[in-house]
Length: 173
Image (cartoon, rainbow, N blue to C red; front, side, top):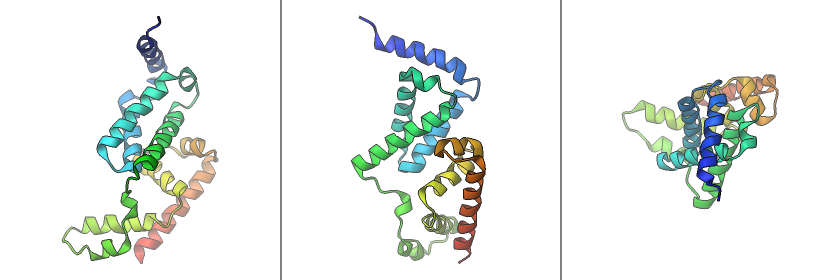
């Protein structure tokens, strides 16, 4: 009987050689973890989903043979986060109500600013929020982000600029 763990390990080693040419493995892991944490806002769950993302990615040869492995991994992570959210009904930090932010009169301006930013982010559609996340947090190029959403890099750039304009306008209020 064939050992499935052995074939997975061979697949990981094979893919790791090719995959590491484009990006360091730890950097890939960190990017996926940050994305999962952004979606779930829970450290332990983000770690579990990140681990599951890599297991699924390395478990299917066709995922590894594609031209854009990070796109595939982000898609796997997004689907796993969505499944987890539906299953557990986690409350996102984005769900903070305006009254809760305004009642916070503590000395930490950064808490108020973070709350104001979350409120401003609510004015954006999901894709615009994710474009900002991928650009600012994971420092992905417009071309890579465009591949994930089947948009040209120019369309992503315009969406990015429009999102920044909306955020600036909301934060100036």
